Length: 355
Image (cartoon, rainbow, N blue to C red; front, side, top):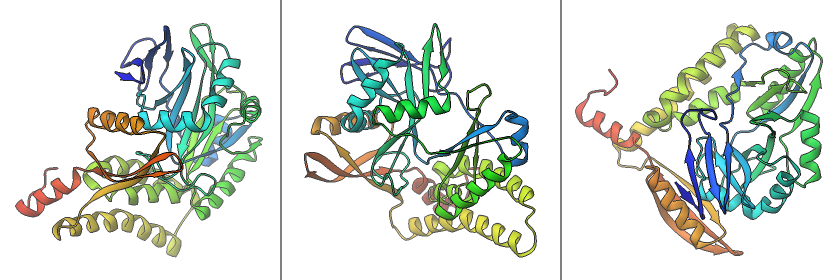
């Protein structure tokens, strides 16, 4: 595949294989970026001392999309979790932090890369508004330092200091706790996040001697189901069961019963049936069921690159409105879903395609 003069190959298997690994060639230089390692999910906070017997650093898990940044041939390239150079992500990230990211990477051994979360409402993938990042921003949560033919994750405190020094942003470090205190302290954080509408936490050994874990609260477990079931035949199936399992163990660990249990069960049931039923009603009445969002590009060329990329990936998008604001090309985009077609067929035939 190509982007902005670079040629790149998403790798499916091999030495650097796994989801998201990519080989990038640009301006006579070539770099490999390995796939971002999957993080195990914890469903019982009481097990924290077992996984982190020497203490645990707790960082905020933000609700956006994973982007790795590497320097190739004197230019920074942003790689999505799937191993692609999304033109929108690259154009926006370079415009905001291109020089800072390049300077940070040039201080590290060649081939090192950073990983972080793109958050905000102006992106094609995961749109969640944060007070500190309402439109588009990038928060670093890992730095992978090249050592020979492999990469080592930088210790937590050292990473935060380096990111600050180069004028970039980190995900919040919420504290480092001894193992006996960790379950209670993390529960306090999660309870506060549920009240604030934030996603969850990533739990790390301060020196990365053990593999990290992640934990999310009910606001995310059930809220994600509610969002996914807006498009039940697109995201619904993948969203549903894993998040129900998380909530099963959370309810067990919290010891919910009586009215508290009934309220949680009602919340979960409404999250499943509410938006999915509204989708059926919308299709039955001829109302559209699709995503619409705003994207902001540095130039018309960047917009056209993104539209070509989306279509090459099989994503059906349409520009509804376009305007210029302060040197940026701002567009309102519609992204079509398959759920309306499946629902329309079921309304017409009375049959389900699932069983």
